[in-house]
Length: 269
Image (cartoon, one colour):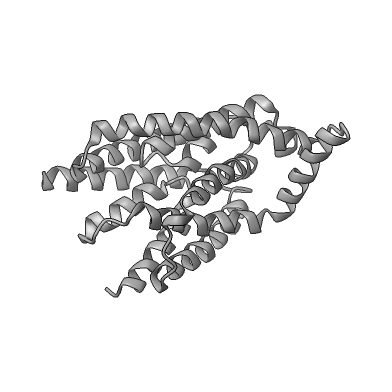
């Protein structure tokens, strides 16, 4: 497969899986492993995340403008609007999530080493376990809290939970944040929106810190554009779907994929 077509394919995979609670990191690791391609470099992985970050910023641009404006007014004019408070809630949750994520990532890397099969086994267990937890929590959680009523406690706990996903591929950043939010009785659509808003600052920081590693080639641009467009479509789909549907289908998919990857990894050992 031509390199730019491979980049487009991986960009689409990133866009499809970043916002659904099925783990983009798992899929971006699994695809090269299954097809025996070269592993994608970290810089290209972050480039694909830059595409989906742009999708979040554009889809929720009105919310971002309100959050930033409210956050400034909260400090300057002492106007205590929900958007103003939510802006600072997100800031407060982002810092410990980033620090904890880096620490946990080092620990996990020391455990897995360079063995791809070991990494795939860990990913498979993360997919299965998180899928089961997502199903159980979503099925039993109440839908009592809408986005406009989310407070500091819910935002902070949900935000910090991202650290686990950053450290363990297969967990899914959106998967764990949506699960935690649902566990605190936040309705499904609002849980997804909170998850997306909380992911933006951490992803943006990672992208900005790696800009010097980016190579703006045809393959690079193709992957970013593909992840952006597919990500935008998936956000629109998910926000509409969750008005009437549950997370069950994503939980079942996680378990099935996890079992397939586990069996394949054990055969390849």
